Image (cartoon, rainbow over all chains, first blue to last red; front, side, top):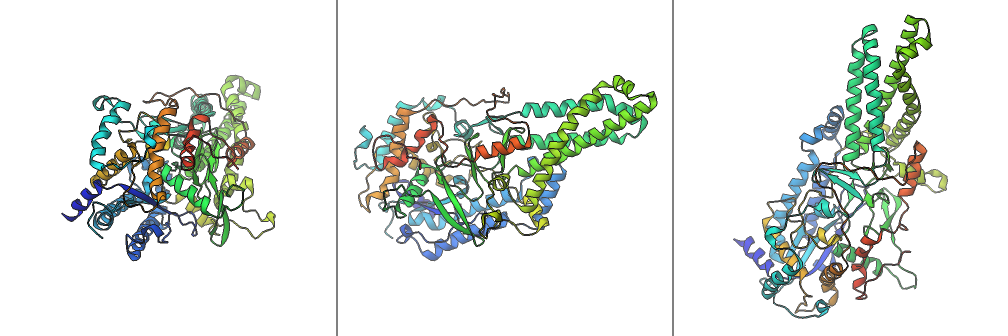
Length: 143
Length: 466
């Protein structure tokens, strides 16, 4: 399969560097990452593709933190039960985080690993950065 | 140190030699227990029940808070309720019971929940930030500024660099010196609940103080009613007091509590309605007295919306992943942030493909420096250099682990250093806790700063504080 082949190649590659996409605080404290295309990735990936990935991530996080009927209902219900409901139920935010993890894995398999890149889920970095590991080009097929 | 030699190494040979060298540093694999991340958490927190429950190390007067609540309510149920049920209604102990349960639940949730701690930056990330700071025009002899200005809703907000956590603090985040953690939407460190109050537990805290005001007012009212009725029955208040001395104890406790608790509830209701934190209010961050056009950029300019957002908004997840497993290679050696390197075993079991890659990264980092054949510039190999050098340095320096308790047994609270018994005391604590960059963390953790200087000099140095 194409993806395992490329990931096996990655196993033999060395880490060249890491790029960190920082948070964008212009709209407040909501979780949003900068869509500015880092210079180090210019030779590796299409700008459009990268921006699309980040934008999708931003949309998913916005959905998790969305204020609306559903989140208020969840909050009120939790308050009435003295917040014990958090021990039993999975919150909307947690559900979206699982969706995000799946999306990142998918993106890694389909797009980034064949290009010698690896996206790290921001939750593993405290939602501070999107870490992109750039691997050496040696053992991967010419690009 | 042999690790400083640059040599070209074939990755496959590397992997086999790695397993040999790594076994000299750690126990044989079959006897090594997988450690969880809470065991090497760098902040001053205590963890119980295998990481499920966390508390600040300075848990303050939490036992006193719990004791007072239990004693007062216990006395109320034992001595006042029988009389009141007989004379008035059975709903009195029912209401009292509901309030009591609510108070205890919210108190425990405030104390035991992660307030919104931000995990510290990993060495790579810290190095990247450091590089950006250095590049931002430090042509003068002064050290580069450690603040960053951003625009939020057309308002200029200054982000400060945290020396302990090695990152620029997000807006509204503050570093609590008692807990040695950066906490998001930091409100204050409350000694009464023995924890910081931040983004994740502010709603619990608010529910706690509001329900506690109701409880104390309710008990106060019931005790007054009890003594009044009793003195009418027995023709004298003195006689009534002699018959029910416990009521006087409750009266005294409630009387003194009501002033502070009601005051605190009122204050926090104002903060919620204005979408402010205690920290911001005390510092006057958005006060118009400064002469500039500055208002709170986070408010929705609507009391109802602000209340809904703060109290009923979505519950953010804990970012520190206390119960995740550490990668087995580097667990025993250090307590620095390099143990937070790719936590592939923690969250997503489905990420098997990325696990293998990250495992390789770990083994790479353990080894001697890898020099790439195509030389796209030395800076690109710097992060790997720092990582491997950090491991060597931290192996020689490795500080003693602070003992964390495992299992559910509680520990005696240590004498708190900044305990005060009033709301003003809370404000003092808040002032104390957010002294920004000048706070120097205790020596065992300060060597964690060394990776940022390794790129400049091979010896251990410390970043000079501005």
